Length: 115
Image (cartoon, rainbow, N blue to C red):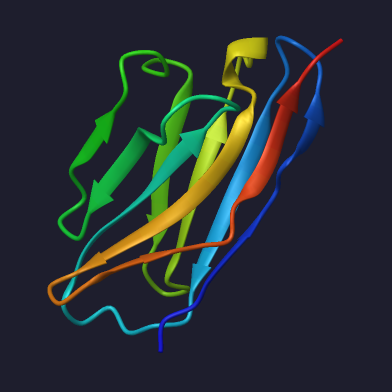
């Protein structure tokens, strides 16, 4: 059974930075991609960034140039470095792991950007 454990969320002032981590307890075999999604109150869950097993990255337009996704293969952990945060980035951030057979989700970590 795959478990995704997120950490690194919290409260930060506008313009600040946070780094989210997601540790994947599962195997890297048949893992196609890992990524981050977010859901703000009253809004649908949306893609933030994904990274494939081959290292290809995709970002939402709203975070391009500010967020960076990376993966540590040895630790099977994916990171999301978030810089220049603004209040519109406030949301619950969910880690996602796409395997050939199914997709797994983490429990989510709250990110709040406020002064």
